[in-house]
Amino acid sequence: MAIRSLFQACLLSPLVSLTAAKPLHTKIGSFVETQKLADPNYGPKPGEDPLFSTYYGVEAPFPGYLRDAVLPTKAGPPGEDDEVWQNLLSAEWIIFDFYQQAVEAFNETAFIKAGMPNNTYQRIQEIRNNEAGHLRIFQNQISPTSVKPGACQHQYPFYDPISFLALVTVLEISSMAFLTGLVQSVKLPSSQGAMLAIAETEARHEVWSLIEIWKTNPFGGPTDTSFPYANQILDTTNSFIVPGSCPIQNPEYPSPRQKLPALSAAKNTTSLTPGSNIGLNFTDPTNQPSFDPNEQYYAVFFHGLANVSVPIDTSAWPQQEIRVTIPAQFETKGVVVAVVADTPGAPTKETVVAGPGIILEQPSALATKLL
Image 1 (tube, rainbow, N blue to C red):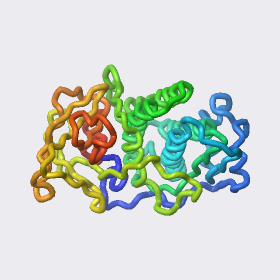
Image 2: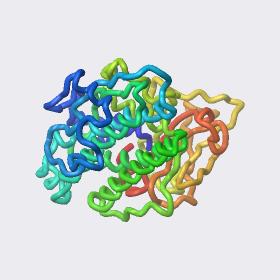
Image 3: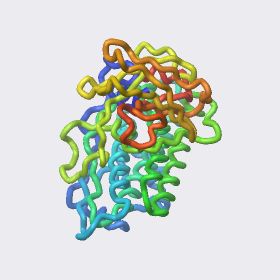
Image 4: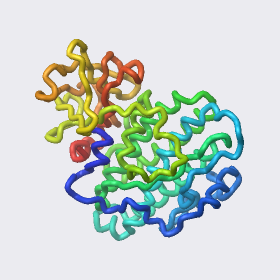
């Protein structure tokens, strides 16, 4: 249910990640070369160069091997949407490295032996290429008066092709959910259009995984889930980042950051489909919620364009588990995003006191395996 919990544990928590904390890339550009990225015309251009679609090498494509922060080249105030694009670029480094490390860790034979279609490795390379294009697009969206965040070191909890592909499904649908929030955060119509175009690409990646990998119906109903507080989802991806590994010039990620307690379903959960009664688990022992005994709290479930609030009893927590029923009226499609809030509907980000948790409904059988 919770991305952060999934990222920390994945399918079987005792297993060690196959991928190393230190990037495996055989080619890393210098700081001086990286600063050339300040020029939007430097290097191949997404949408014009096939590198971002049909490159099938193992080494990281441009600009994935240029990993330092890009320093401002002009003085002045930041661009109107710079903070949002900085958040998105930092998140994109996490996504790009996820696919790049898989390209380096596996090969075509590994996926075939796991029972996947013969072209699975090629598709992973193509998604990796798309994500490299996103890096460059996001860099170019940040004005020359602001830092363009560089890459941290990342570690992921996949240990074989199947656990990697399970993470693909959750990451791609989560990307679609937080982009709906980011679109609401930006001010410029050009930024809104660019983010919509990126979300459409992520939807194509998700559809591929649903059809080809999980052999399930890819249609998620008339609308995917819209979640208004993108930074809350982005914050859950910090568990991918090796502490202390980010370029010192990088801004806080995400900014602003609420540092909310992580939310998941209890480990013994057998179903996460609508109508299921589940226990809530706050997975980070160093960051637990504090409930006012005189206040009513709610589990707020976002699905499609709607949200439903369910009162919860926090009076006996932590001695007694908090339980709640996922709204039965939801269709078993797409994804449900859940938070704990002190106000019905969680009308502002400040009313959220824990979460979010991502509940995968498609394929629903995968959801409980990711707890």
